[in-house]
Length: 338
Ligand code: CUA
Image (cartoon, rainbow, N blue to C red; front, side, top):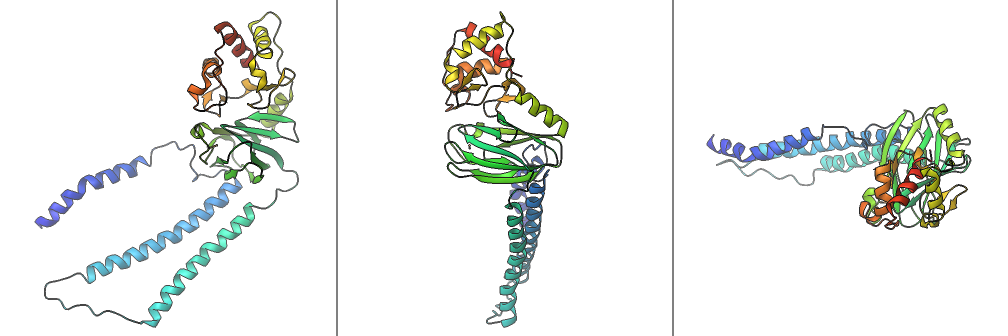
């Protein structure tokens, strides 16, 4: 009795810690959970996971149950005889060879079926989006719509989306857990994801393959929209950039932009043609900057333009160190590019 009491006392802190961890796992929200799929692809993978998890649980319960039974049933007792070992029991041998084979078949069949279903070519009429990974941001091109944007993917609900994905530099991994699963983005090679999102909303994602200093800052967002909201977004993206009214701070900013270092890397349609950084033609229509890491507002843009590497380690964009007046004007211009 005393020994039992001491054992419980010794285990108590560990049990409490485990309990706390278990309860902590119930807190929310989980913007990047894979367990609440919102697309056909997400659902197919979740379904597969649930099935395999059920098999794994059954195996665990049976194996651990037999182990615990043997531990109790055959534990050493003073004066008890040595248990008789079993050798060459044909029925047992056949059972524990066949049972795992059957379980593996039950796992393999749905797995292979899901692989073929999710790797099928996109049906005609899908909305094509080219995804290009960069250190450390995402570029999206809609070749049939003539739209180029960065970090924030807009798609219509209920329509099949065909992502053709490659990388500009190193291997990244495109991952939007709720709707688009995960797939590597490899330089010199095109990978595909085909999916249909079924619920409106804003979904978080991020790069899931270590790709250098700012891997953790290579985030992304996906906006699943109604047809009319998506069409309105497309129509706005196809517009030429806003041209500031003369003699405004935005006009000064446009002039500073067009005659400064920004044009070496960034495109603003009709103003500059740089191809290294994100296209800024409609920068202010996005909610985030710098790999969906910071909010797209004046304060963050000012810090970003002048001190990008200190905000995002390894950023290709250098400290611009612009005089305050130029900086304010350029940011005012960028913020006008709705
Ligand atoms: Cu891109 Cu990690």
